[in-house]
Amino acid sequence: MQKLELRLGELCEYFLSLRSQMDLPFGEVWDVPPKISKGEAYGGLPWLMLDYPRYFKPEGHFAIRIFCWWGNFIGIYWHTSNEMAQKVAELHQDWDGWENGFVNDPYEFQQNPNNIADNRKQRSVTYYRIAKRYPLTDLDSAMEELQKDYAVLLAVISQMRG
Image (cartoon, rainbow, N blue to C red; front, top):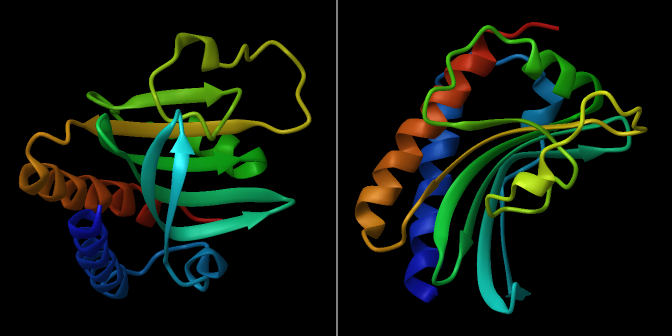
């Protein structure tokens, strides 16, 4: 886990560098510094997480999260809620190779068809997530893919205004 935590630190530096080169909307979401967190009990296994941006307010969420679940996978998640979730859902973007849609529980990271939200139900909070996962068998390759995928997400975000 220590090696992986170091790699997430490197990824964080890349994210900050890439973000500094771009004119991105929603300025306030980028003001909160990145954070690496870890825990011991997601499905009984340790996990590591890098969030940047990490904007979690009562009026809505806007975060890009790298989540590593020990022994399972590492993934990238663009997590939004409420008004921002609606904006992201309405993007005319080809998400081929990505999971995307409304979800019931934004903190469930493994693929689970029961987590897909029924959009016909009225909810007080709406969550929309775009995600991709990679096996941990080749960490170098996964890190390269995460860099590319983060750049894709920032390119999409750069096209959004207001």
